[in-house]
Length: 365
Image 1 (cartoon, helix red, strand yellow):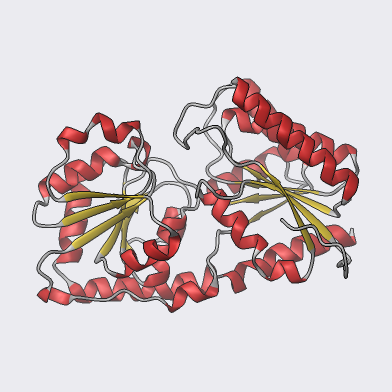
Image 2: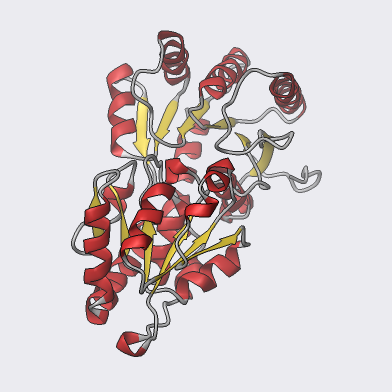
């Protein structure tokens, strides 16, 4: 992020958050925020916490030598910005990983010792009990923050239970307003082969095994998978049915175009926060079949914007896909419902003012 020298704005916001690459959900959010209208209101700075050293999103994270070096780089960048740019507000994105929570809590301690207001943004599900030390660090981070932001209702309720006196808000992810100008190219019943699209990391945690079994039961439907390949894919390469095509990583404009050329979006994930892929599918007008995890039940109204099932319910996935493929009118109806809802609730113009309001209040206080 370029450091402004002239015509400085009156307020400064420092983000502790990753930038792409790699193109994860939190990194996508950070890039969108830095390019939003917030840049016209504040001087924005960034402590980049992106993954380094070739580690993937689904790798087990340990406090290895590379992670220690990454921690030192993050701490050094934080101290530099606190001393040189003296932000009025610090906004920290917490990925809720076991190692990351301890790092983020340490960052929060430094920020609060400097007397600077702190926003902690919890990206994903605040997990079920995973060790006393983890939750002690997480709870301390919540208490250190002037404002806590949750992506879904479950996380919001957890935060309010820890400290009801600290302000907590539930704010969704968002897309640039121009994304909503895209629309699905409906093919109706004349299309030779229906196309189901999946966009996420190709991992068992994202429902890879369920996709394979669902595709095997629906051999007349094409399943196209966009995303980074993991070791999980290599473990089942020989088991993939012929109607599954792995398309690999794609840039965002290409992903949007692939969505516009699909009949429905499928994400049988085991865990999610507020998935951008579902949001993008909604924005272009695709019906969605997914699981009741993270914020997805808040995004997709079951029966109106698609169908939601429990984790691993392949029978439900098959039934839902058959039902939607057999009814082009229903696909159009559900897609239009998703498009209208996402534009109203999850556009940049709907969400950015909520962040600006938080920063303005903290600066005033």
